[in-house]
Image (tube, rainbow, N blue to C red):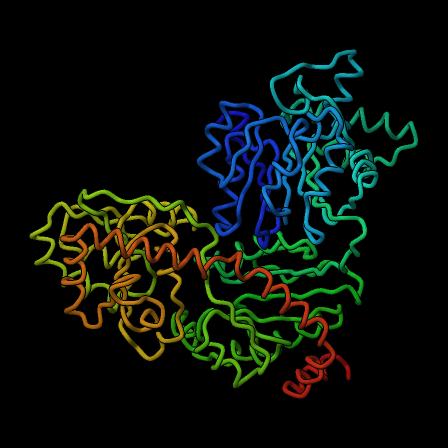
Length: 572
């Protein structure tokens, strides 16, 4: 990957996902643009790049590309008729001859409630000090010592520059990583000793000098800074649960006034002021007893947290799958919480019987790959699921006559070994449980996804996430009516196989008709793009958490009424 093709993950994470119009200065080859647009595909993206070879590559990744030097451009030309909700400069400000003038112009290009996302190298990094002590300043093609840098910044000078030009910092983070660990271990301690002798706090020096870049989100100075809310997502069932835990935590960090942390199987709580807005989301915790959960809930309440219990499946089903004889402890985590967060309306209805405060947020796609029309070559079929053997095996067996006529049809199977073994073909590959990104990569290499459910009463609580995932990767879907009939429009965004005997004919239609296959895949992709992206949900989640915090006294009173033993645990 070239310098112009890099993506700064910290900068990407901080760009608000709610932006409708985005401007990036110095887009390089468009890698950051492509990454952001995969997260927020409905945003209109304008980019400026002076390096023409890179601009030619970037043009395919953006809606509008201006190959010119921003400092010599007219603002009206850049704006193109409307102001921007987000403006991005990744390691660009230090290349500008007049940073103050550039930032002042960008302020005028930004909507009143817009944000400026920037990253700059930290000239106070320990390597810069080391080289200066040795009487030299390296001249390199990229990085901190890029020979094309015209300006140099520390966090203080960046903050002052933003202030002079009508901005103030809304959120920021240091990028700290060691490029040469052996050299760092040799020279950082004596540099810290020197700093201490100069009266500099040692820990502050270590933090500052180990920061290679600062990533900052700034807003117009006249806007009041909202009180930041801490959201802590504690995952207790991490396997196959990225879409409900790790990824929401990562993407919610794009919200300017949310400070989001994610931990796994960890009951600890950060020390925060009691009145600081904060919400603790506990995902699928199965306590050893009802009393244990109540004690931990009381601990969180004493520390001032609003506690939300996150469940994406029915507790009775989880108890059955994990061979627990008593699911009541799980139900306690639902009734004994300020609120419950879930993924489907049937689950929400079931939970409201125990706790009236329920937020339902459907499963979504986090990234949308660019849609590519598939060719007429024999398609590859994807199947990936857990705990479906009761129906997946009969579906695999039902395909035997069809696969005898289409022996070139290949399968990619993830996790379900029973389905793989039952497939009557040698053209198949098995993958054990994969990371979520690898799972999606395997899916993305395929053309058709099979999504069977047996139709058991309990299955109506499940979500349609496999349709969403397949649509986000451009696959045509064949699905069972349970759960999926409410989402998949038969013959429009996929095919519904109502009976076991319908699976082979439905697959045959897609094998015989590449045009139908492409049409269904395109319609599913557009459906996901239009309404099933996490970016569409970010604001609703943030508003719900804020509302819970605002009503915490009311919610706590209702909680104490539902759970009398909680009052005893709190000593009330």
